[in-house]
Length: 70
Image (cartoon, rainbow, N blue to C red; front, top):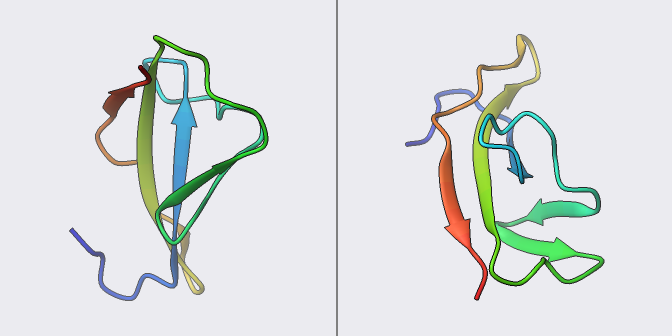
């Protein structure tokens, strides 16, 4: 769900189940993943998101979800 007064969102894509380290080179723009290299085949990735507010800074990270590459 959206967060009131969010100026932007940060989405982290990780190989760690804790979603604590971003995959190098992965950025998200308008919810479309741009990646300088191909993601590894047959790999599970974890993602989480947080809202950013220009007055209060970033909020807490969301619950972690997963996706897998073919």
